[in-house]
Length: 156
Ligand SMILES: [Ca+2]
Image (cartoon, rainbow, N blue to C red; front, top):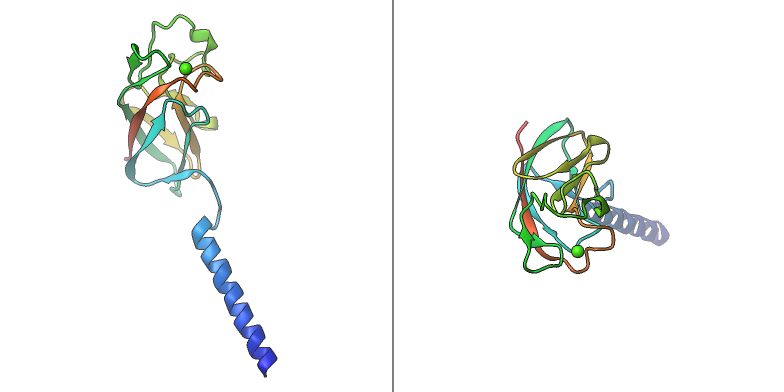
């Protein structure tokens, strides 16, 4: 009787543990933050790894993104918004050479790579992930300054 009770209690505790862990980490663990219907997040100019956001919608959604604020690539005299610097001489050395230097990039993998200059609409499939960062040269993020605030809303 005592042994049965002990087994019952320990299995209940184990169940509770599993339940707690699954609430803590989610059924499908991911390090990306999920996109709510609308909100905002920050992208630091120094963040070479980028900020990852994932669509949690069950259907394709259109999301509009807009980056505001100023950041610099290391020269404090030169600050830019999300559109970056189209005049920069070393465009070919950027992480995304075909996108404007120091612009805000949304790298959405198979959904495409976007320059989030002004209002940018991206269609995301379920669980599609985008990575947001400045378009600086690889390894050249350490001396950057500032951050952009990216606001978004899912409208369709
Ligand atoms: Ca830099």
